[in-house]
Image 1 (cartoon, rainbow, N blue to C red):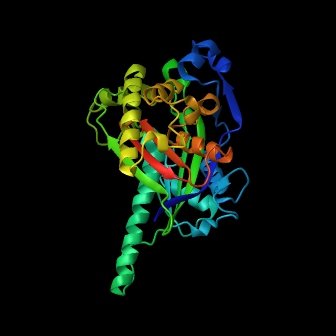
Image 2: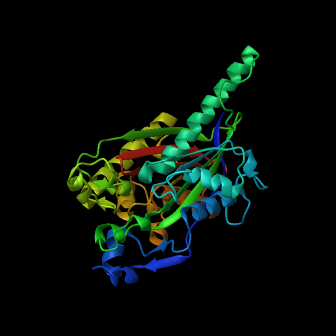
Image 3: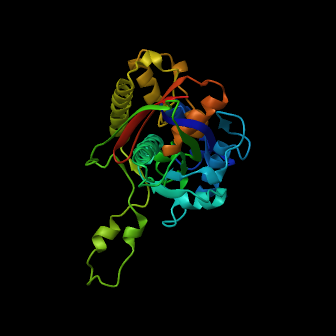
Amino acid sequence: MGSVIIGSGKSLPKRTVTNDELGAIVDTSDEWIVPRTGIHTRQIALEETCTDLGAEAALRALGQTEGGWQREEGALDPASLDLIICPTLTADTHFPSEAARIRERIGAVNAVCYDMSCACSGCVYGISTADLIMAGSAFDRAQAEAAGRGPRRNVVRRVLVVAAERLSRLVDWEDRATCILFGDGAGAVVLEWREDEEGVLSSYMENSDDTARTLWCDSAFCARETPFAAGNEGVEERDNLDPYMRMAGQAVFKFATAAMMRCTEEALARAGLTIDDVTLFTPHQANERIIRYAAKKMDLPMERFQVIIDHVGNVSGASALIALNEALCEGKLKRGDIACMTAFGGGLTAGSCVLKI
């Protein structure tokens, strides 16, 4: 028994931004960016909202619109969703949640909704949380049936995890360390609890304190004044706030490479599997050099890794879900195959999950 992925979708904005275009506004070039990141282009949302991107990815995962992947034939009814989890840093509104906005847009009238804030690890945290909730729901139902009573908690059999990001709104377009890396987009999976299949074989999540502020973005609303401050009270703190994301590149690279290896090994060990059992690795797309480092450490060819950063950039928690979708649509993953998804990001967060397709 387990949480099985039965649908997958993605959505990218229409506007493609090249490295040469970035070179016109900041001191960089295609020749500088590609060897250091592997990125050639990224998609930037000019007209699309976070809700637009998330809803489109969700509808494709459900098979309601073309361009997605479904495990079995036939579209999935949005009303059959019991829960929507949306990992995001860039919700269109503080409230309602981005998950609730997507719920309304796609017609998931029976779904409970909430957002998650775990940066680029949102793909793993979202899938792992969905799996935990569905496993608990199944246990509750079994206990209730044995006791001849109704379940004590919400019955959750089908969950949509949809990560949607417009990181272009958090990027300082004069900061070469960040503006060359990030793009906008959304990725989604539909998971269903099945008694006769395994699905999510294992998961591992961890957090460490970012005392050195290696990955950071202040909340803009903290700069707003209240009518209760006396004199200059709080002015210095407000003046020090930075509305853009900031990153210490070398420190992030060191954290990411170590976390990717550690989390992958832990998740595979929990599943009772080895690297050789994995059909395809679908990691977070932070930097191609990180993926190549992991491949070298595991003594694996790059063909064992789904790499999409060249045309989407870093889309935070949506990156690995987009990579998984492209692998499924391209036929690189088939029923019964094993995929391993690993991610790391601000928080500092990291995790990995092992999936049987």
